Image (tube, rainbow, N blue to C red; front, top):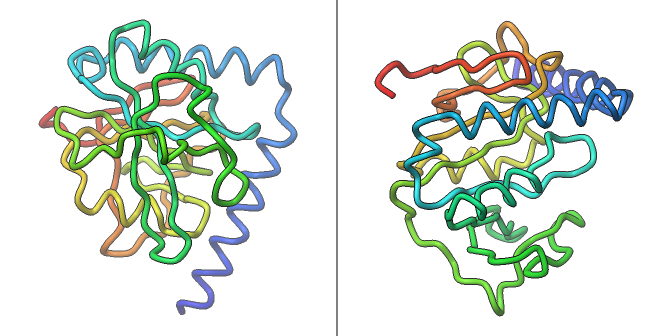
Length: 196
């Protein structure tokens, strides 16, 4: 059963990767802009003091513009660094895009020598990537488990961002997987947990 589930997730990742790789760049830019606008109208975004977000790759929802907007809005911004040995992820505050360098998996990460580690951020919003999200807020990640481990102890608001054509009706998930609090696509905002 576990092997079948693993193969199914690999199949889904290939499907959604292909969708994104073949996306028209003009459409992607429009959808990225719509997602940014939806994030910034949220009360949770408006009132948060620090925004935790990933640094996007070409096939992901663009977060560079989200980061720039957060700085304009007077917020602190922290981005993740992954540790391959412990399989854990920590967030470090950045004050400029110059604070980034290539790190784990060739992704841009904070320069640990100059960036301050964020310890148990309170009043934080975390922007979470995924190949796909389902209607219950569960995500299909990249398969390494970094976000799953981090989110186990994260007390702030979890916002999943994804393109509308990558939303699934239901994704496979385990009992330790965390759903996001809010799901945002270019087409809608969905509050998963009504106590927000």
